[in-house]
Length: 265
Image 1 (cartoon, rainbow, N blue to C red):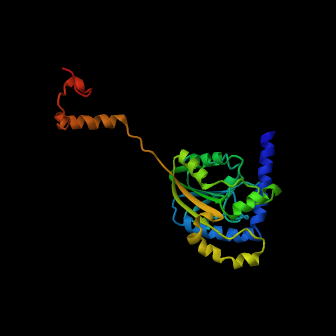
Image 2 (cartoon, rainbow, N blue to C red):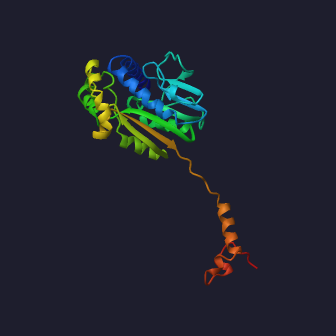
Image 3 (tube, helix red, strand yellow):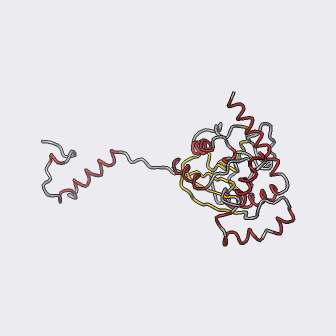
């Protein structure tokens, strides 16, 4: 019963977020996010790319060279005009392990009931050396300040739990990811007036140089590392070869009993 209530609440929040991104300041931010993400996805290669959750009723995968694009919708009956997909819970993806080359999480973690589980699922479905791309609101920005003042109203996008980059990097490290890139952007305050926001566009030009840590949104790219396993048998063979060629013979006091590789007579 508790899980059903949580799921319904998450669906409501996600739908409200979709509506917010479709107009006003949300649409302006969406345009900037699409541009930044397209530039980054263009450099990532593979066979399958998956986006979890659409934003503004659309996906961000246009800039990717990967031919097979999938959208995992988080809202039932959500129409996707651009790519095939399915509806699911972001913490339980119906995808085979080690099958996706790139997974995109646009504003999923800050609105998920269990963001760490979402990252675990991402690690599970990614192939070795696959990439996860995360878009999130930066709590250490003007947007984070607005969120601290307006979260009590329960309206998008302020009802989300903005997660700092330090915490996300810690989570990714535990899952054996390597951070490839972090970019902060959109330095304008979240004002309602579109006319004023356009006048403040110069802040996006100066922000990366004057106050680079305080971009309203961050883009993080991480790669799933693969730890090679060295069979013990190969190590023993290497040691036998060293002994046979006399490399180990320079050690003083060596007897057949000192090395388990020597055959007893």
